[in-house]
Length: 157
Image 1 (spheres, one colour):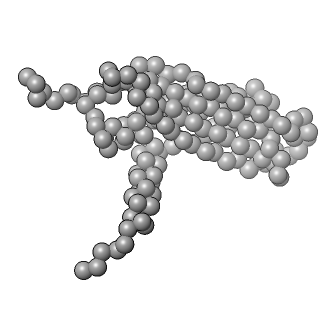
Image 2 (cartoon, rainbow, N blue to C red; image 1 turned 90 degrees about the vertical axis):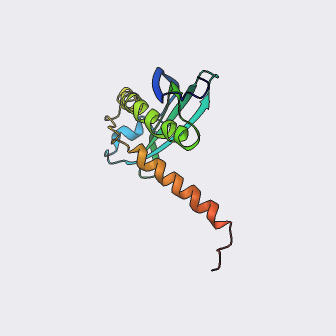
Image 3 (cartoon, rainbow, N blue to C red; image 1 turned 45 degrees about the vertical axis):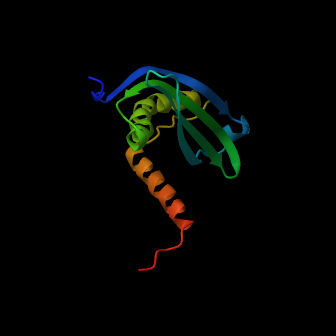
């Protein structure tokens, strides 16, 4: 039948590292300082349609910066990517799957890569705390709606 609904599908096809960067500009001097860094973590996701068969690339970018006083001890960046076959989702549901389910799968791989980079760079391991991508997605959605609403005049009743 022509009007049959496609059953929603979400399948991981492949996981891979798209980009890795590690810099430790203050070595070896930083190793002589007491290790009490200020660590900041930036997360970002993006997605692109790969083909017309429902395959999408989702890229989770994580940047970890550790500073001692004002000196950068290290900067580690990973772009962990995956190809996911996503069918039966459209519009907001498709964006939600790509913004929550896919990053939840990619995160453990990215976290392990960041940890390994830091240890190989001569620093203590960095165990990133789990991330609630559902909450981040809802927060970004609310922020986008708020920004869209600021451009409109309030309705008078």
